[in-house]
Every structure is written in C-alpha cells, then in structure tokens.
Length: 256
Image (tube, rainbow, N blue to C red; front, side, top):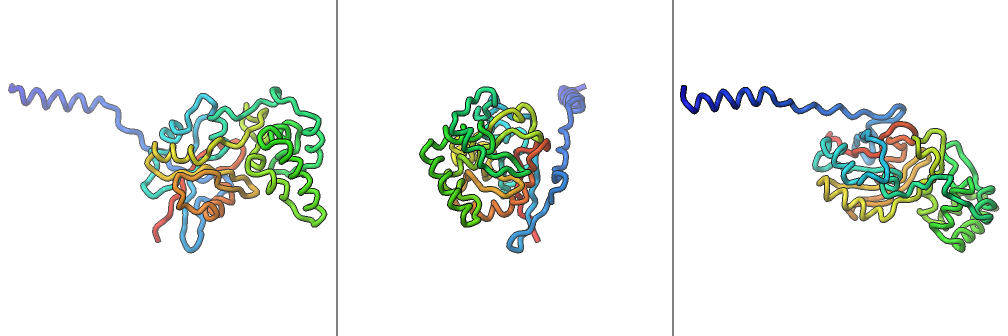
C-alpha cells in the first residue's frame, strides 16, 4: 500500500464525517401581506426575514450579517425597521423610567388615537417627544396643529415637530415583550447605520419607518436611491408591526 492510497482513503473518510451545509428555509410573505408588488411596470419581491429579539446587546450589523446576508443577491436592497435599529442602540425606554411633566400630560390629551398605534397619545410618549425635540418646537407644533384642525387638515403637528417625534413608538398589546412596556425612540444617525450595514453585507441598505398607515425612509446607504419610490414600494408594511418577528427584509427586482 502506497502513501498516496492511504492519503486518498483518509481524505474520503474525513469528508464523509463532515456536516453537509443546511439548506436555507425559503422566505415567505407575512400573513395578510403580498410577496410581490408592481411599481412602474417592474415587479418586486419583498421578503421578510425572521430574527431573534433584538436588544441593546446586539450590533445591528451582526444581525444583518447573520440573518440576511445568506439570502442576498448583488442587486438586492436590505431594509431594516427603525425600531430594530433603535432597540440595538438602547433607545427603548421602559415606561416606569419615564416621569412625564405636566405639559406632556396636558398635550397628550389632544392627540388623536388610532387603531394602528397610540403615537404621542399618552404622557410618556409625549414626554419623550419633548425631550427629543425641545419644548418650544413641540409647543409650536401643537399650535400649528390646532390651526390645521380648523381647516380640517391632519398631520400638521408632525410636519413641525419633525421625524424624531413622528418615529416615536408607544407600547401596544401587539408588541413583542418587553417592548410592549417601552417607548421606542427614533434611531440615531440612520444614514450612518445604513452605510455601516451595507459595508458589512456588501449590499445596499435602508432604514425604514413603515407602519400600516404608510411611512418614510429614514436612512440610506446609497444617496442615489429614491426615498419616495422605496416608501411607496413598502407602503403596505410587508414586515408587519405585531408578533411577526421580522424586523428586516429584502427588496428584489424580478426579471421579466
């Protein structure tokens, strides 16, 4: 028996004992959401990705690399919920740590509440809006909103208060614990986060604030991307906003 034969026999046995790579589970649309949407005569897949519960102990780049990168194609765009980014930055504040001032209690009484979320309609979320935006800006926004209501116009408060106020999420029964007892602020420096993620995964990335009422693109890794077009493409909220556990997803253009 030659040395060559021995080596070949050993290599074959060693390879047979190695674990075969597991096939990736197919990405599916969330219940009640469409996987494919057509915009400007182009069809796009929106593929939600399930992850573990993201906390302040996580680096969002690590999360994207672990859960999204194995699925990505070169021309894909990874979109990440602003709430996931904010939670990874430690910007989820427990309700019991927030002490609303009298102004926050007063202003919160006049916020319209909807079935899609409480927004700034409780003292704790209004208090955080005041801390994020400043007293003068929130008072000006409240004054302008009153004028808007006289003309039967909605949304003027957030036009003045800005995206930091609009992106504040209050606790709801449909939110995954422990965030059902937290106020989640807007992510810090979303453009910088998107760029960092894109550099890690080798694919374009956007940070989105999308809910069942619509939303906005907060951060992009590529400034040539159209925020308006992307917001329309995600306007039906393919990630959902309850217990889906899908804080990120892939946008993929489909060939004709």
